[in-house]
Image 1 (cartoon, rainbow, N blue to C red):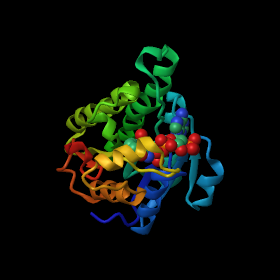
Image 2: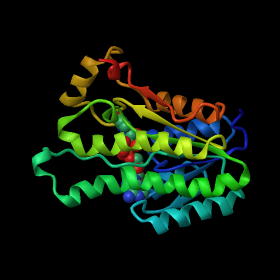
Image 3: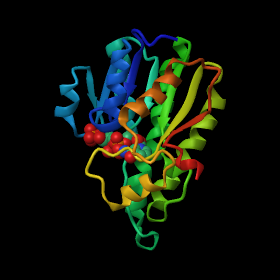
Image 4: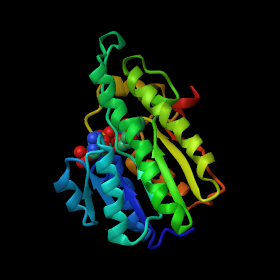
Length: 233
Ligand SMILES: NC(=O)c1ccc[n+]([C@@H]2O[C@H](COP(=O)([O-])OP(=O)(O)OC[C@H]3O[C@@H](n4cnc5c(N)ncnc54)[C@H](OP(=O)(O)O)[C@@H]3O)[C@@H](O)[C@H]2O)c1
């Protein structure tokens, strides 16, 4: 399928991986909608229609999807990219720390998928790509809460793929180490352990996302790791 003139929403699309995905989509002729939370200047600088919402709020998620669908008249694809990342010794995690991660990384992904499906099903279908993480596949002891949220995204993807086949394809891309800031000792360790012996780029994650969006809806419930082979260790 060509992405020409397909309306595709990227959540958390103003910066980093989301920005790479948005730019790659535009390169292929898609009509890109950028969702942002706080990064308004970076979102507007991309030059695509931008939509603000706090994804912790289900009413705001529903309003976001209504606004995008009203603006473009339809919605063909969604990339659920927005997420949070924190680091804790599991003994130190409080309820609020757990909820901080899960409210965005897992709960909002479900309600974004639901809102997307309510638009896509009446128009004949579409494609959803949820961004999970290598942390969904490999246990990171100081990120137990994050790993659990991203593993949840993987199973959510499979269950929704089953629920909405053959109309909506739901797949997941699991990035490995995709640095945008200075590389610290922890990241160096990941790179050294990686068969590829390097970090990945936003463009490489975008390529995997676009492959799913372009692909047949017969491919659904699947996961592709963009991790230089690290998940195979
Ligand atoms: N970078 C990596 O190495 C890596 C590795 C594995 C997985 N991933 C996954 O890849 C995706 C992108 O990661 P990233 O590192 O590029 O970006 P990121 O910094 O993790 O977050 C992307 C965006 O999510 C948005 N966001 C967070 N909470 C929000 C909320 N409550 N409401 C609205 N928006 C919210 C933020 O938008 P605003 O800035 O507009 O507020 C943020 O810019 C994430 O799902 C991440 O878990 C990344």
